[in-house]
Length: 514
Image (cartoon, rainbow, N blue to C red; front, side):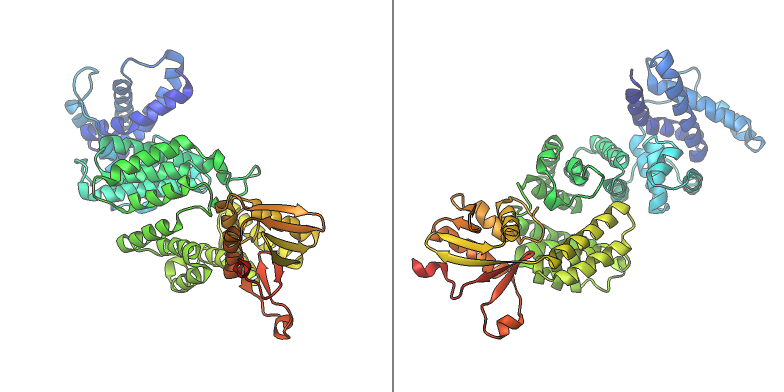
């Protein structure tokens, strides 16, 4: 049996052993310490001596001996030692045939504990991680984490080990959700542990739709991890991720769990979040994502569990459906919300929406403001990189002249400007910097519409008038007007399209020649 397989088995059995000891001796803190020592003994002996025939019984027996050793070494607990000796069953048989994993999980998520303490204790007592491993995952000193866990165990001393209370399932789901979110930012071991615990909970409660919804949400989100970071660890946003690298096995499993959950009729917040994640995972690109459906789901989520984070995400979806102005209007309603006051999310979303609207100077300042508030290095680097990229493009703005004739739209300009525009128009995602996505979408939707870079240089978009009209409409309706001195003097008007300024020959009406 490999060391990895032994580790997986020990993590699975840890809460069952703890439940057995707590039931027998009634002391959660001492029992939890003894279980940790028993797990360490198993990790040392099993690779050498082989796995015992009954691993659970071996662990319960060994951990019980460790616990009794602790009691013998403490004069103040001699009476409890005697009581333990009287109540211990004879021989090495299992004390009971009951799996206490779910009970222990509920106990570790008890409402008397702070969220931070509940997370730490769950990872150690139910997840089977050592204090050092938990401390490393949260980037805090081991001594600090040990104190946090000790305080949590002390708070549970007066809490009896009873059957899981159905009204506290929400607390358990929230703790697992928080553990997953901690891992989502880069610490993959925490995400993996949260998924393992969610699977365990789903096996115990297979008919609960919100348990299935949470597991589906984790799987659908985790599926994108392979594409979330670049080769040097830099953050890659969803719109720029290589979707061929997503784990389609996890997407399939998560989608199946979600489909089975929603037909039960009790839709909750985790199912709604999983449905949003599934829409992202199914879409071939950001531009071809079903944003109206996502916006509708966020609307339901806002009514079910209102929070500023949900409203922030809804603002992004609204911008994709109704335009950046609507997204910015929604953001304005969140400006004074205390939960967002000191974080980087609000200015980061504001920067993104200003970028989409063509307000590049405002976008740069907002990206820098967000970077100053970001606490995670990879996010801070991404935000600063976005600001620097926009500034670079602003200082190198190029101009193109656009003409319509017959079945062609011709854009004449410098080779650099035309190559940049051609790259953007040929893209099937929003990878090209600062390029409004509707232009790309019209090309994607019209199979016969082609983009070629002819000598001259001229960028030629060719197709039927019916196909060219939506392309021009997208250019016309989504580009931001720039009122320059030339405009006011009666010179030809122009529109901003990303880093380019496209100058049109007016009047310009593609349908006029039909």
